[in-house]
Length: 75
Image (cartoon, rainbow, N blue to C red; front, side):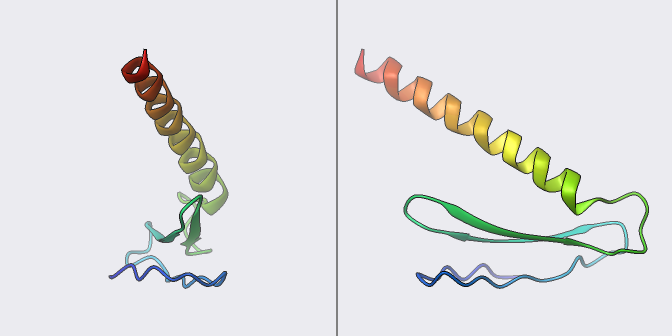
């Protein structure tokens, strides 16, 4: 799969390639990243909602690390 960034507000998503997997497309913008997450409804072991929550938490941790790094470099 390819990620094709676009400057428009639209996004393109795709489905998971295995029954117990996720589809996760993303479109980076200068100040944000648009994600489109999908799972198969028939799979009980996957949850798009939980995946998005964890993705958000992980991205916030990365942001905090980058901000700390930036402050340490400036000081």
